Image (cartoon, rainbow over all chains, first blue to last red; front, side, top):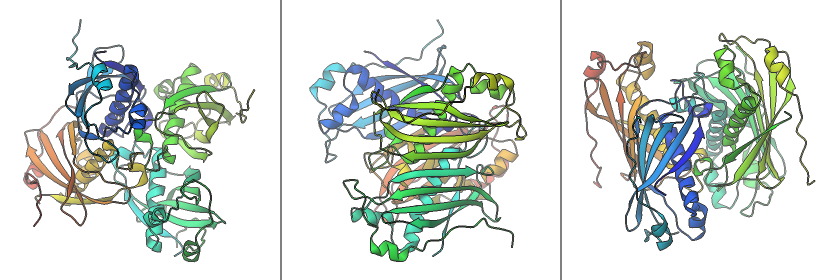
Length: 141
Length: 141
Length: 141
Length: 141
């Protein structure tokens, strides 16, 4: 799996009085998308947690190219762009559904930690399943 | 203490594309206000938690009379309107600062529970400090 | 259509440090569910807005029966329980998917207003399509 | 003014079931802090809006060094780290109050636009008042 496409429809709660999705809410979208990436891989994050593995966010970044608004259908395309010894980096593209228009890009860096918040090596099971892939800027066909 | 006035200034994140504060966010305001009510009483909620006492919300209600928007200064007036054996009811009035205009009212019902989520009697320390008081609709003097 | 079932999976952002979905976030779930109710009816809310009709929330209520947490799949069952001259009341049941366990109930009251926020009669098109229906507490069949 | 210190106390709504402030909510804190930066400068953002000037976010970034949790008192130290022809960059340090412990850093890049969302030159009034200043990592005295 090179990437996973998670769909989300913007609700009123996501928008602000500028009429568009509030910049901070994209990090919610990113979270939901990486949850589904893991599930699609056969490794739901709840299973990680049961094994005492957690993935706190170390860094987060978003670039806002065009706005989205209420009732827009978004695709949050998610890939793993880097896999270190104990770190994992996700990359996101928010695409307006039915187009190849990328409206927001982003990434989040996570460290695998145990219950005591000590970094730990990424389990082989995850390492074997994850395929590192960098999302390219999509183009008009 | 009959009631406590908590101040909050609305940010963009609180508004939606109708230009006003999103209805669901008032429950954030209520939470912040009851936190400060307890602190003003000398019983910060963190102390309750340290004693193994928790106050999950059983019921929540809000009535929206007039909107608020970005940068509005709000006063969230908070009182305890009922104290049962193990339950406590908070009442809220959201007032536009500098006026006596009530823009939203609400209440939340909570049950004191222990770590196992079993209801437990309200500690005497709390019972002695809390003064049950019903907020009246304020009026021009 | 007596009711519409909207599905939602809880994310980390929805939870709080008690480990469960924050009480205020259920109002987000209710909003998403009533959006989809209207869409299922063939009357997406964006169409209402285009006609200069808005549905601000006048009152909101939730009763929390059991908690939900991260990754739970929820069904938000939504019906219109009352239709007045210019008001509409929605009723919600949040059900843990795959069970008939109702974990939260709620309702929201809305008034149809025009652009100047003046209440206006519910359009016939909506009145004809909406079927007033009261959700019963579901039971094992 | 080199920087402005905005204070905020974390509420339950800000936390997630890991027990700490959800990563996406820091962007709320940043917003509140830059609102107050502008106000301290004598240029509240509402005044910008009245003049038809808006400041959408073009990019946002956060680095999470240590967690914060419920009831923590945070200081969000905010400066303008760059001022272009039509762009402005804010820099943030989230500090645990009463310490010099920086728990999160971040920045946001904004473009001044008019009502038609066209970039426009930063007004002289703002340019004259803003003092570009880079926050240094604070140190134990």
